[in-house]
Length: 361
Image (tube, rainbow, N blue to C red):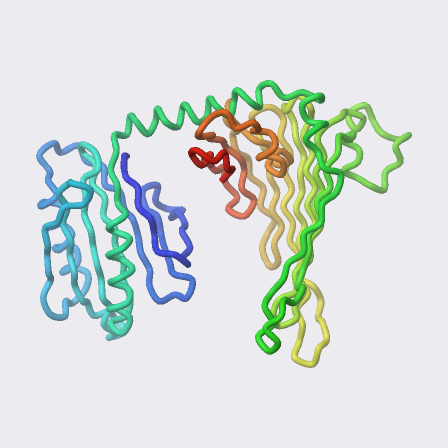
């Protein structure tokens, strides 16, 4: 729609499941909450002023207003906008401070950026909101679509030429990374975790390490890119979090299989550990369809499928060697799609090369 904004740091951004046109934002410390709502209209005569009036009417109908509703005209990125500032009383008799910014990024499209918090936090939250609003930028939606197409084409030009000879020189047999945290008492770095990554060209049967090679089926003998990760992290309270991940994709990139298994070992105050909480996500793809299963404690097994784009799609295994795949980074921007297990959805990602330095971001 030709709109971009930088949210305040230390926040979580999620898309509302029940609304295709709402994004939720919440600070990590829960001091404020925000939304970005997109309103598409067929009314050619509708203006920002009209949307502001509708917003004010909605506020008055929903909550008792404490004090005045302040409406301000302002320019954002050289475009007209409206700002609404109000304090309302919630059903629990608590006062809540709210800020609204209404913009018109493209024809027949209006966007309302809202943030709210307790009155006690209003001064600090207002500063965060003002800085965020200053970051708003508008651009031609057609230009955005063209930029995405160029970025996708740049990535597709690279991965469409992948073959066994391409993969092999890029792989690193084994890498170790250690995680440190500052010890508050000694100010020294304290090791609290690690992760190990192994990369190889291997048959599909290696996904089941206990299976003997001579017993592999024809399907299990197919060669592909195999990436394995093992990680452990010790929480500040002593609880232990273990993760094992395995990803395999065929050399022709037409199929893949992957799994992520996690276990949390809670530590009690007396230093003992109780029964671990386990979760798992597995996926398999043939062509453009990926089937996924999710197992989490105290919930039924969830199975779902997604369609995979035909261009610029990265397999789960290729994500681990992405920066090596794209070398020598001859383009400024690369755009790609991948499945994000943490969000359980397909994600569009952009990687840029810092101009003049050839530095990978």
